[in-house]
Structures are given as C-alpha cells and as structure tokens.
Image (cartoon, rainbow, N blue to C red; front, side):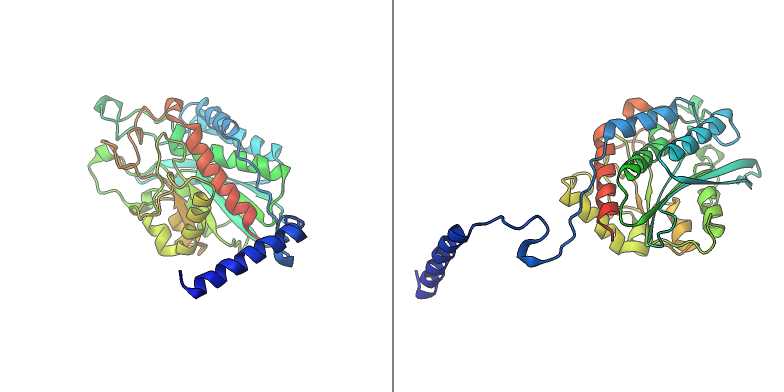
Length: 335
C-alpha cells in the first residue's frame, strides 16, 4: 500500500465521521447540494386499463374503412377522448385506395392544454387490414384482420395515456392522433410490387393538411403493434435517420425504467409506417416504436401479423406496460 492510498483512506474515514456528526438526508428530494432540480412525479401506467381499451376496439370486429364496425369504433374513440377531457377534432374525407376504391377516412385527434405552445405528438393507427394476406392458410387471405395488436394495441396504450393526462397534466401540451387507412396497402396475393404510397393514407392526409394551421410539435412518437407477447422493439431505421436523438431519449428512458429487455439498443430494419409522412411532409421529427421478432417463421412483425390470429389471445399486458410506462417517463420528463 503506497502513501497516496493511505492518505485517501484517512480522509475517507474523517469524511464518514463528519457526515455522521452533521447528519444526512436533511434536504428534500431534488434539492441535494442546494440545486433546484425539478422533481418529476411520473404516473404509473395501468396495463389492465390499456388492455380493456384494446379489447373494447376488438369487440366491434375488424375496423375496415367503409364498414359499420369502423364507424362504431370511431364513435367509441371520440367518446373516450372526450371523457378524458381532450378537445377532439376529426378529419373526415374520402381518399382513394391503390385500386381506386373510395374510402371513408376518419382521423381522430385529441388535444390537451391547447394554450401551451410547447407540444408533443403521440399517434397510432386505428383501422384494420381488409385482408389476412400473410396467413399461412390461403383460404384466409381475403378475410379481414381483427387487428388486436396491429392497430388496437397502440390505440389502447394512448387511451390509457390520455386517462393519465386528465388526472395529472404534464409540463407540455399533448396531441394524440388516431390515424385512419394505414393498413390498406397492396395485398400480397395480387403479386404486384407494393407501392409505399398505398399505405398510411390517413397520416399522409394529416401531414399535408394538419388539424391546426402551421401545427408543430417538439417531436412525435408513433406506436404500432405494441402489445404482442415476447415483443422486442429495436431501433427502427427511418427513426434513426430522421430523429436519432429522440430514439436515444426513448430507449434511454425504457432502460432506466427497467424495460431494457423490451428495448434492445440495437438497430432494426426500415419500416414504411405513419412516421414517414410526419417526418417527410410535416417536418416533425418522429420515431416508430414497432416490434422486430427474430424467432417468427411468418414475419419479422410476429406470427400474428396480417393473419386471422391477430386477436386478444396474443395481447400481453406486460408488453403494454413496458411501452406505456416508457411513454409516460418521456412525456412527464419533458419541460
């Protein structure tokens, strides 16, 4: 043991003795060292509540545009947002599908703290795929998808977030958008090259004509398929390209909250999703929280993706909790 080490040990012993004499823990949380650090009380995300909102949508049946289930579920979403104190706006119009089919589009927007110019945008799509074109049984390819994970899970998480915001307002204003006609892209059985523009028609519409003139937000987070069992959310490629700092922020909060196993700090693939129009047209940095399943035989999005098995049986409360709590950690730590 050298002399320098002995001096450190003596000073350490003296410091411990001094601490015992003057006492510790006398300063309230967030005031250590005389600083004015902001104390953040982040609500606890209720996975059971989110699960019930997912089930509430699935109960209507496949929410395919132009269907009665679609109309009734849209009314349900508007009612829920209003119940949680949001100012609700709707964008209703007719958009043309890739094959020229006119579709009754309905984007649903819930806003909190309208007077707050500092805003965050949270979004998910609420429509269902008209065809189970990735189902292993070809007989199911023209059957509409129930969309428990692909659509309803992201909306269910955001409805629970809206409920929490009503109870405790964050520092920033929040806009929640449920985009329509996301999942009407070219089906696989047509054996045609799928055009990127045939997907995400609702978010394309909103990005060109937002619900508020000159709308802007600090950043946006898109949720898609966030309720599947065993889900892992790698860093999506376009999210890294357009908003890498937001990716790092969200994944950092996930790890700090104990959900690192759901959010590995590794790069995933590139996904055509609603975040692309928000980045490219609206010019708002937006990331996509979307799963990449490495053990699926049918798709990197999991075995239920675009199949008749996308139902409540495969929705996991633990996954909803991991995503929802991470989202709350981000929202309430912004100032």
